[in-house]
Amino acid sequence: MISDIKKNPVKVLIDTNVLLSALGFGGIPRQILLLVIQRKIKAIISPILMAEIHEVVSKKFPLIADKLPIIEKKIKKLFTIVHPKRSLKVVRDIDDNRVLEAALEEKCKYVITGDSDLLELKNYKDITIVTPREFLEKFEKKYNR
Image (cartoon, rainbow, N blue to C red):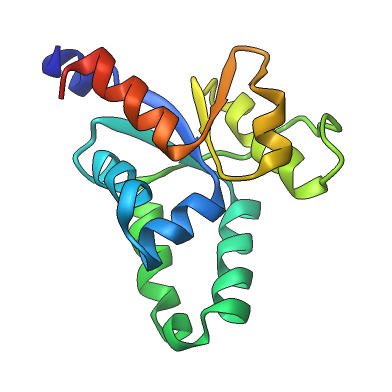
């Protein structure tokens, strides 16, 4: 099973709220980020979502704002950057639509988020929308980690 992961890792979009939690607080979001680092999952991001990370870190985490260039460089190295061609209006929050656009562009299997509006959807097209805990449980069950 592990060789299957390496050959064909599951594509996920890690929402910015989860990614920032992974970087700043650890826990389950950090475990998911480690799966990206180990190349067990393929993480997707778009330039708009990168800009959101920059904005949130600058406003809410000023103590680590000077580390933004390093954080962005590592994300660009580890994540696949997509440029969505379609604009969606599925949920009321415009930023949440940008998440779905990026996930749809790369045909992600999961969106991992803590955002309640996205989580209410549960699914969009062929994308399953889950919390970090739900994703980790599904991943561990499938791949017997």
